[in-house]
Image 1 (tube, helix red, strand yellow):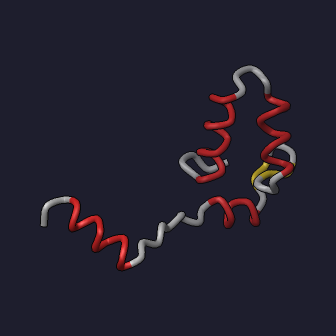
Image 2 (cartoon, rainbow, N blue to C red):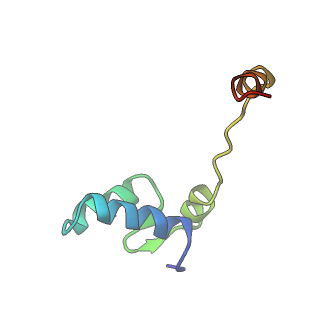
Image 3 (cartoon, rainbow, N blue to C red):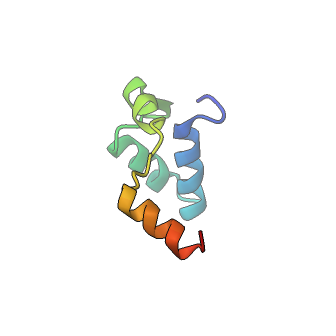
Length: 70
């Protein structure tokens, strides 16, 4: 698995959450389709690498500016 990939990040988070329980870590990664066995899947690499973009409406941005004293 490429170091620094999104699948590696997910794996590290799961290992931190379930220390010493490899079955829980890799079982979860296999179940959600990021890995097959101990190898990342192309689909998993593509899915895991999507950045999560938070959409902010113009109204929310205006309210944020108003509350910050602008």
